Length: 128
Image (tube, rainbow, N blue to C red; front, side, top):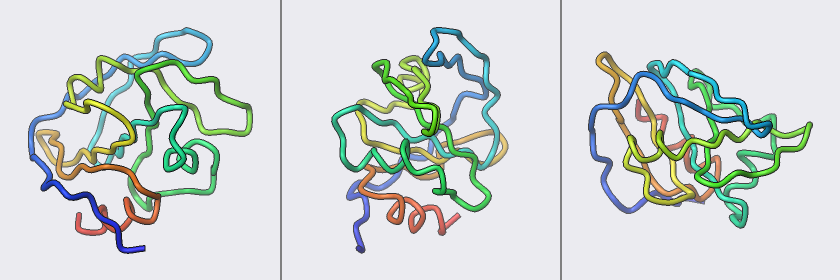
Protein backbone atom coordinates (compact mmCIF):
# COMPACT_ATOMS: atom_id res chain seq x y z
CA UNK A 1 0.00 0.00 0.00
CA UNK A 2 1.63 3.25 -1.12
CA UNK A 3 -0.78 5.65 0.54
CA UNK A 4 0.57 8.95 1.78
CA UNK A 5 -1.11 11.98 3.27
CA UNK A 6 -1.88 14.53 0.58
CA UNK A 7 -1.06 17.76 2.38
CA UNK A 8 2.52 18.86 2.95
CA UNK A 9 3.48 18.91 6.63
CA UNK A 10 3.57 22.30 8.36
CA UNK A 11 6.68 22.54 10.52
CA UNK A 12 5.75 24.43 13.68
CA UNK A 13 6.60 24.60 17.39
CA UNK A 14 5.21 21.87 19.62
CA UNK A 15 4.42 21.95 23.33
CA UNK A 16 6.91 20.25 25.65
CA UNK A 17 4.34 19.03 28.16
CA UNK A 18 0.78 17.74 27.96
CA UNK A 19 -2.01 16.98 30.40
CA UNK A 20 -3.48 13.58 29.52
CA UNK A 21 -6.45 11.89 31.16
CA UNK A 22 -6.56 8.11 31.44
CA UNK A 23 -9.64 5.91 31.16
CA UNK A 24 -10.16 6.06 34.94
CA UNK A 25 -10.35 9.87 34.83
CA UNK A 26 -6.95 10.57 36.41
CA UNK A 27 -4.92 13.37 34.82
CA UNK A 28 -1.19 12.96 34.21
CA UNK A 29 1.44 15.50 33.19
CA UNK A 30 3.54 14.06 30.38
CA UNK A 31 6.80 15.50 29.09
CA UNK A 32 6.94 15.50 25.31
CA UNK A 33 10.37 14.74 23.95
CA UNK A 34 12.05 14.48 20.55
CA UNK A 35 11.06 11.39 18.53
CA UNK A 36 7.47 11.35 19.84
CA UNK A 37 4.69 10.13 17.56
CA UNK A 38 1.20 11.25 18.53
CA UNK A 39 -1.69 9.46 16.85
CA UNK A 40 -5.19 10.89 17.23
CA UNK A 41 -7.91 8.24 17.01
CA UNK A 42 -11.68 8.01 17.29
CA UNK A 43 -13.90 5.09 18.20
CA UNK A 44 -15.62 4.62 14.82
CA UNK A 45 -12.42 4.53 12.73
CA UNK A 46 -11.22 1.30 11.11
CA UNK A 47 -7.79 2.78 10.29
CA UNK A 48 -7.34 3.74 13.95
CA UNK A 49 -8.02 0.27 15.30
CA UNK A 50 -4.50 -1.19 14.80
CA UNK A 51 -2.93 1.67 16.78
CA UNK A 52 -5.10 0.73 19.77
CA UNK A 53 -5.60 -3.02 19.45
CA UNK A 54 -2.24 -4.27 18.11
CA UNK A 55 0.35 -4.01 20.87
CA UNK A 56 3.05 -5.37 18.56
CA UNK A 57 3.04 -2.19 16.45
CA UNK A 58 6.20 -0.21 17.10
CA UNK A 59 7.80 2.72 15.33
CA UNK A 60 11.51 1.90 15.81
CA UNK A 61 12.93 4.75 17.91
CA UNK A 62 9.70 6.80 18.07
CA UNK A 63 7.68 6.96 21.30
CA UNK A 64 4.01 6.29 20.45
CA UNK A 65 1.23 8.13 22.30
CA UNK A 66 -2.39 7.48 21.26
CA UNK A 67 -4.86 10.26 22.07
CA UNK A 68 -8.49 11.20 21.45
CA UNK A 69 -10.88 14.12 21.87
CA UNK A 70 -13.63 11.90 23.25
CA UNK A 71 -13.22 9.32 25.96
CA UNK A 72 -12.80 5.79 24.64
CA UNK A 73 -13.00 2.61 26.70
CA UNK A 74 -9.66 0.80 26.84
CA UNK A 75 -9.47 -2.97 27.27
CA UNK A 76 -6.73 -4.56 29.35
CA UNK A 77 -5.05 -6.02 26.26
CA UNK A 78 -5.03 -2.72 24.34
CA UNK A 79 -2.70 0.25 24.18
CA UNK A 80 -3.85 3.13 26.43
CA UNK A 81 -5.83 5.86 24.69
CA UNK A 82 -5.44 9.19 26.48
CA UNK A 83 -8.11 11.88 26.50
CA UNK A 84 -6.20 14.99 25.37
CA UNK A 85 -8.33 17.66 23.67
CA UNK A 86 -6.00 20.48 24.81
CA UNK A 87 -2.95 18.73 23.31
CA UNK A 88 -4.81 18.17 20.04
CA UNK A 89 -5.68 21.87 19.95
CA UNK A 90 -2.08 22.88 20.70
CA UNK A 91 -0.84 20.63 17.88
CA UNK A 92 -3.54 21.95 15.54
CA UNK A 93 -5.10 18.52 15.02
CA UNK A 94 -8.69 19.24 14.04
CA UNK A 95 -9.92 15.66 13.74
CA UNK A 96 -8.92 12.01 13.82
CA UNK A 97 -7.45 9.91 12.34
CA UNK A 98 -4.32 12.02 12.20
CA UNK A 99 -0.71 11.83 13.35
CA UNK A 100 2.05 14.28 14.17
CA UNK A 101 5.72 13.50 14.71
CA UNK A 102 7.64 15.69 17.14
CA UNK A 103 11.40 16.06 16.93
CA UNK A 104 14.27 18.49 17.29
CA UNK A 105 15.37 21.07 19.79
CA UNK A 106 13.37 23.16 20.24
CA UNK A 107 10.59 20.62 19.80
CA UNK A 108 8.71 20.95 16.50
CA UNK A 109 6.10 19.12 14.45
CA UNK A 110 8.33 17.69 11.70
CA UNK A 111 5.74 15.70 9.79
CA UNK A 112 2.03 15.05 10.02
CA UNK A 113 -0.82 13.54 8.10
CA UNK A 114 -3.98 11.53 7.90
CA UNK A 115 -3.67 7.98 9.24
CA UNK A 116 -4.48 5.23 6.76
CA UNK A 117 -2.49 2.36 8.30
CA UNK A 118 0.56 1.80 10.52
CA UNK A 119 2.70 0.90 7.49
CA UNK A 120 1.93 4.25 5.88
CA UNK A 121 2.95 6.13 9.03
CA UNK A 122 6.18 4.10 9.22
CA UNK A 123 7.01 5.11 5.63
CA UNK A 124 6.42 8.78 6.38
CA UNK A 125 8.54 8.59 9.55
CA UNK A 126 11.41 6.91 7.68
CA UNK A 127 12.32 10.31 6.22
CA UNK A 128 13.36 11.51 9.69
